[in-house]
Structures are given as structure tokens and as C-alpha cells.
Length: 514
Image (cartoon, rainbow, N blue to C red; front, side):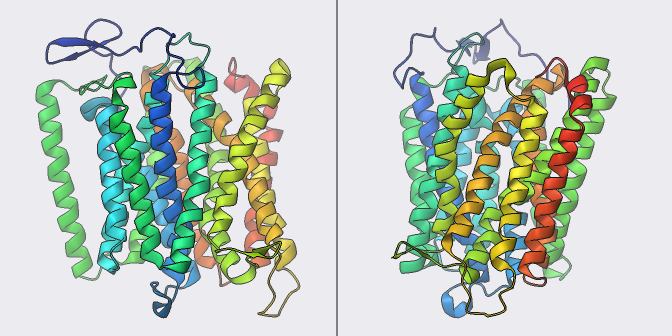
């Protein structure tokens, strides 16, 4: 993890970045660019990239744990269900931990445009590697995708923000369109990859993810002229001498870590289980370090520390919800593959299509929720209440699964597809409510001295959720389904209710943030 430091001020005149002696404006042109549904044309470029990135990432995730758990005769890796789910969660942990470093690299060394570009290249290479039916290629592919997503994911949203001037009233609507694009990809990806995995083979599904990311890169490069802040230089670049020494240190560190990992694997110490445990440990330590540095920093005043205390509660609520959300692609997929029907109104579909339901519900529900908040105006719930509602809905999505999995001892019993679909509906609604409110609160509650590193905290909540999940899902298949989904769902509901109970304190702590 990179050293945490207060954000420096960019050199040069306001609104400009120095690139080889030429001052390039970082602000976009005046708000007369309305080519994309009244939004800047650059939003089409970035939204298009996210459609394909989510298509590839979540399309692959929809079949990844099923691939791990499938027998060798079925073309899979033959893992126990709990082990397969644990590895899937560990992969998610790695992705979001690397995202913290990705944001720092964009700020200090690469710049947002190049970070996204090279991140996309690594992702595409990773998916192509996974298309090769060799286990070693699969692991290498997952490593490349983790590194690439870490570079791409935290910086695309930052580039969306740069399309608008601070006072541009179109900003929120633009982010809503961008969020819908993400979920269009989340809906389409599992449809394609799951069909290919079922009818052609697992690695055909991984190939579709590779092609999707390639298409995203092509349209990203083709539309680069519409992007603001596409300068080669980062906005908060390190001084040239320090940048060179830092790059050398990063390369040397990467080589040392890679050699050490190979030696530990060769010696038999670094097993897959220990690697998962190590990622979980890092996911716990990293946010503790981040919060500690911020609370102890002399650049953070008393009011900012008060708001930061409130944010700690919201951070933990995010962990509780995302612990449930990320299992949409692991334990819920495993449950659907063994205990759910794959027919609706007489139509038979691949198991992985269940994952598409989550993206579909989020596409449909996002404008409904946004419209509701606009209609309520000043009467809408406090940010902490919205986040609590999201956590409770996530818990209820698991509690719903207790009903069809209880009281059936027959191995041939299959629950109706509507139970899984209903669970995804609750989960999708909770995600729309929590994620939009949580990201907004994160930017508003962050200390000014750490403003450009704010989203690192949000990504660390996702990493921690995956880290905890990597340990918990090991119980899947070893305890009954009602017990597994019931206990985890009840814990999430309890966390949501606790946040509601702390509402009065949170309003005072977060003031003036609503």
C-alpha cells in the first residue's frame, strides 16, 4: 500500500497542468457540450468503457466460482464449494486493495487517462490468458485482471467528474447516466458468458469477457479527444527526480515480491489458503492505518475529525452490506446451481443468468430511487438513514432464502426461480440506495488535506467486506443453507438497525452534511 500523505497542491496556475513546458487546461470547455443526452460527449466515451469493463468483469465473475467448483470431468477445477467461494472472495479483496494503489499512481505518476488505458490493457490480457484452458494461465489471468482493475476502476469516476465545472448543474444527472451504464454491463455480461460456458465451455465464456474489454478499449481511445484532463502528466505529479526514484522503487519492490512469492510457493509455505488469509489480514490492517493517519494528522481540524468519526460508522455499514452483495457471485451462484430451478415460464436458462438479474434490477431501480429523492427534496432521509436502509435490504435478501431452503431433506428438491430472483431484487434495491449515498457521503466527509484519496477509503470498505467473506464462505456447504443465509442475513439487518438507532448522534457528527 502506498504511503498515505496529505494531497499536495498542483504546480502551475490554477486549472492547468504543466506538460513538457505547455500549459494544458484541466477544466473542460464551457457547458455548451450537450451531445450525449444533454451531457458532454466525453461521458459517452467513459460510460461506454464502463459498459464493457463491467461486462467483462462481472461476466467472468458470474462463472468464476462455478468454474472453480465444477469437477474435472466438467472442465472445472474440482474445488469444494466453500473453497471455491473463498478464492472468489480473495480475488475481490485483491482487486479493491490494488484500487487504493491505483488511485495513488494516477494522482502522482501516471495521470488518470494513462492509468485507465493501461488498466484496460492489463484487464484484456488477463481475460485472454483465462481463455487458455491451462490452470497456470487462469491464475496468471486473475492476477493481471486484479492489477488492471485496480488501475482502471478508481480513476474512471474521477475522469467523469472532470467533464464538468464545479458549478455545472448537470453533474448529478451525468453520474446517474454513468451508473446506469455500469449496470447495463453488469446485466449483459453474465448473459453472454454463462450461455457460452454452458454450451461451449468455461473458457469460451472467459473469451467473451476478453473481447468485451477489447471493445471497451477501442472506443475509449477513439473518443479520447472528448475527455477532460487527458494530459500525460498527473494532476499532483511528484517532482521529476522523486518520480524517477519512486518508479525504480516500485519496479524493484514488485520484482522482490514476485521472487519471494515464487520461493515461498516452491518451499511449500505459501499455500492458497495462507494467501487468502494474508489478503484478509491486509484488508483489516489497511483501513485501520488510513483512519489512524487521518485522525492523527495535524492538517485535519476538529470539525473534520468529528465528521470522520461519523464516517467510521458508515464505513462499517458499507462493509456489512458489501459482505452480502459480493456473495451474489459466489454462494448465491452455488446455491442456484444445486438448489434452484433454471426455468421460468417453461424457458430453461443457464445458472449464471441469475447474476444478470442484479444488474437488470439496478438499471431499472436507479432512476426510480433518484426520482424519489428529488421528489422528497429536503424531506428525504439523512445519508446515514439511506445507508442503513440499504444494509437492511441486503440482510433481508439473505433471510428470504431461509424460507425455500428450510424443511426440505430431499436432494432432488429445487426451489422456484422466483426465490433467487426476489433475493436479487432486494439486494439490487439496497445496492442502489447504499452505493450512491455512500460515495456521496465519502466525498463530503473527507478531510480537505486528504481529498483526492477519499475514495480509497470507500474501496477499502469493499476490500474488507471481501476479506471477511473469504473466511466466512468457507463454512458454506459445511453448515445447513438456512443456518448460513439466516445468520449472515440477520447480522446485516442488525447492523442496519444499529445505524438507525445511532441516527441522532450521526446527524450531529456529520453536520452540516445531510
